[in-house]
Every structure is written in structure tokens, then in C-alpha cells.
Length: 439
Ligand code: ATP
Ligand code: MG
Ligand code: MG
Ligand code: MG
Image 1 (cartoon, rainbow, N blue to C red):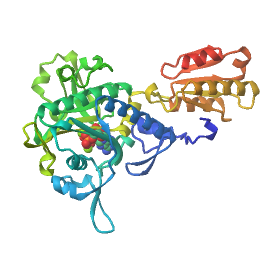
Image 2 (cartoon, rainbow, N blue to C red):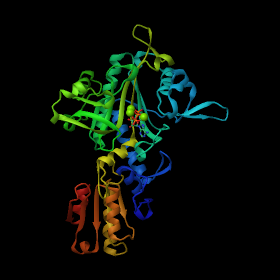
Image 3 (cartoon, rainbow, N blue to C red):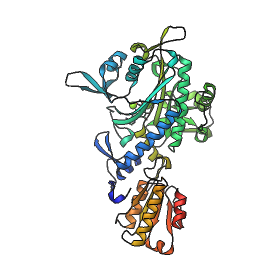
């Protein structure tokens, strides 16, 4: 992409409304625009990052056996009346009337709707396990939308729903998502810690929030240090070997980790002070087993091996891709701007032409731009006539992994400068070597 033809509305000033660094940098880098409290437009750079996150989320869901669908944002109230949640959900739900005065709502989550899909088609235990997910906008009329996309009112969620014949099956489905989440967050460059979370009236121990430690997090969390360097399961995990996945989950749930609602002072006191982390955290994912909470009232049953009809045992599994962008920036930035992990960077590199209009600089820059494009790096080419200082500031702000700087002096000497954004390392190289380094 040529920057001169792109839409990258950079802000020079720090926006006053942004209280935390990720919100500030997203606005400054021209990623989002607020349209109403907690409601954002996604500008080109933001949209690209969001899609990259979605793709990683999707790949890991698929790997774990979940199947993608797409349910609508607008739902009929009837389903929620059936499950008994219509009145309970409260003010976070945006209720809508259509022209026929039918009660509708903008979905804050999709348990009811997916249960309706399930009960319409699935009849036998032989069709289980089944896990359906979608990546769709949600609306929750949060009391305090804040921190940009971190706590929006309209936000993106990947929500998966598992269906099993019994608790044992449901637990295996839960374990598959547990491992998929560890892998997803690692691929996004984040250290996530699964923490015991509230199960509500369902009880049991199958509810974990995946938390990223960050000073600006809204949750108070407690965990053992050992989590910080536990190796995440690789691609070789057999998601359908129940013993294997159970032992991985066991390993990841044995050290202490809990959010403040589940915090157990007595258990905490047993841990040596040097092994404790008590910090703030961002909830980026949440997995939850709720059994027959919806299948029973909504009549989602299957015939078991003995021919008897039983309500299916369910779980739900959420990840917030839009909140994740904020979390990634909170975890990875410096005074000059964002430092994208390679896996989600909106472009792989920026080619900075220091002197557009000068033939040699143009030639070299075009060559680099074409070569990087061919190599699949998806480069941004700064061909604008901004001054060098402004170009460097923009490059640092938008945080692409590599900056390939092409100026008249270097070209004369046969070199370009390659800067690595994360480390700040700079090297003078010949053009081909620089390209080879990036690709
Ligand atoms: P929170 O405790 O932050 O309000 P939640 O527990 O209500 O979140 P869940 O219902 O568990 O959220 O939804 C699953 C995921 O959706 C969360 O883990 C989070 O990543 C994302 N999410 C929830 N609410 C928001 C929001 N207002 N803005 C952005 N992402 C959100
Ligand atoms: Mg909430
Ligand atoms: Mg929560
Ligand atoms: Mg939650």
C-alpha cells in the first residue's frame, strides 16, 4: 500500500478523552473513531489488525474442532423469554421494537439462539460432540463504557457453544477450548493466565477467565509466578485424545490463579511470598460450563444410546477480539508508539523513501516495495513528501515490525538502513540483504 493513496488519519496531539495508553495510541494511529459512547468506526489500520486477530482466533477454534457459523446481531425477544433471561438480563440489553411492535434486541450474547439452532436439527447423541462458534458484533449497554475498545458498548466477540450428551463429554469440550485459548493468546503475543472464575448458580470448577496482566486492567487478580513461563501446548496436541487434553488442563489449573471474586485468602497464605503475583488484569477470554441451563427450558434434547431423551450439556466460550487490540497495545508499546507483534501487525514493514522525486531513491524504494510485496510481507510504502522526522514519527507510532529507510546518502554508498521496531536495532545493509532480513 502506498501511503500517499492510503487513509491513515494520524493525530499529532494526544486526544484528551483517552485515559490509557492503548486508547490514546489507537486514536493517534488513526485506527478507530468514536461515533457515540463506546461505539467505534474501524478505520483501515484498525480494521486490518482486527481481521488478523480474527483469523488467528478462527484458526485455533477450527484446530480444536469448533465449526464456524454466523448468527445475526438482532434477535427476537421470544427466545430469551423462553430461557427466562429476558427480564433477568437487565439494562445492559438494548431492547428494540420493530414496525410490527415485535420485541427484538441487539444480542449481548447468543446462548439462546444457538440452542434454538441446535434443537431444530440435532436429534441423536451420535451427532455429538458439536461446537458451533461465530465472530459477531455484540451490544451491551455498559454503565461505564471507557478505555476505548477495551470496554465498548458495541464490541466484537468470538463466542463458541459446545453440546454434549453428558458432563464427561462437556468437560472434554471445555478442555479443548481451554487449550485453544492458551494457543490463541500466545499467537497474539500475549501471556494469558487462566484464572478460576465465578460459576454462579451452576457451581463446579469449570469457569476460567483468561487474564492478561496489565496495570490498567479492571480486575484484581492473584496467581503464582510459575504461570509466567509455562510453555504453551504446541500444534501437536491431539484435541480428541481426552486423557491428553485433561492432563494439559490439569497442569494449567494446579498452580493458584483466581480473580478477586474467587480469591481464597487461606490458600493464598500457603504460597511463599516470592512466588506470588498480585496484580491487575484484563479479561480477554472466558470459558464456562453451564450444563442444562438453556437446553432444559428450551427443550434441546437428544436421544441417548438407550433411546431416552436427555437435555444436552452445554458450555460457552468467549474471546473479545476488539478488546484484545487494546490489551496487545497495553502489553507492547513504548513512548513513541505501538510495537505490534508480527502476527497481528497491520503491515509487515514500512519502506520509507526519504526523498521522493529523487530518481535513485524512487527506484530503490519501488524495488524494495515490489520485492517485499512479492515475498508476501504486505509492505506499506511511505512515498509522501513529509519531512524525514515526521515519517520516522509516523513509522514508530504505527509500530510495524520493520522500517526500511532509503535516503540519498545511503543510495550513493549502496546501502539502506533497516530498523527493527521492537528492539530499536539499526543496520546499514545493501538492499537485497535488507529485504532478505525482513522476509
Ligand atoms: P467484563 O467482566 O469485562 O464486563 P464479561 O465477563 O461481561 O466482561 P463475557 O460475557 O465473559 O464478558 O464475554 C466474553 C468476552 O467478551 C470477554 O472475556 C471480553 O474479552 C469480551 N467483552 C465483554 N464485554 C466487553 C466490552 N464491553 N467491550 C469489549 N469486549 C468485551
Ligand atoms: Mg460485563
Ligand atoms: Mg467478567
Ligand atoms: Mg466474563
